[in-house]
Length: 234
Image 1 (cartoon, rainbow, N blue to C red):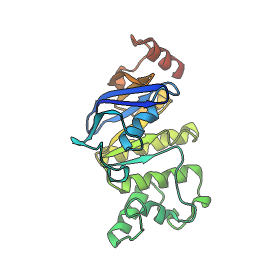
Image 2 (spheres, rainbow, N blue to C red):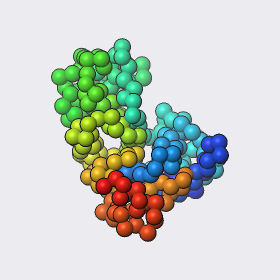
Image 3 (cartoon, rainbow, N blue to C red):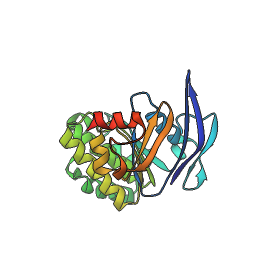
Image 4 (cartoon, helix red, strand yellow):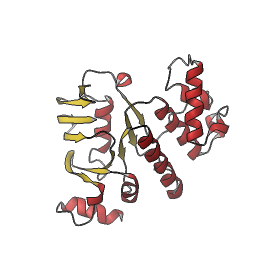
């Protein structure tokens, strides 16, 4: 689904190099210490930053010269990025049309995804009238309503309490499976990765230091940094 072909990037004195092939339908947890390059990997995929060398392919097509809004992916950050002056319907509708020129089919798609996320009773509310968990459901609805094949998650649920965070991740896993969406998920919670991911990528000092099935993620790794990271997170 997404392939990083010897992608190189540099920010100040730090260099990054990614060579990864992620298969369609995977739910990949991106792990690593703070500053290792996890968010950089997502930003490269999204097109917010441009590599100095290498290529990025999505669905076997290069996206290096494709603007971020035209790439076949959706992304959810730690901040929900909901617009305070728009109600739930319009906040989700932005994922379908930036000018909010929504057809009857668009409105039905919004209702359908809101029912799946159990927020169909919140359609006319504004962000200030929503709880943190409800805001995240709305933001997630905007991602899935676009029906893009790739979803990038940059720790969007880290501010939620553990129970609610696990609930949101279970929803992501279910919707991704049903809609055949590939997910790249940055997280610093080992338990979350073990609960929902199919694979993991361990980023160490700007490079891919481990890629494997999530079942093989444990503290016995021959990589001492990965072993220590797992031990600290369990």
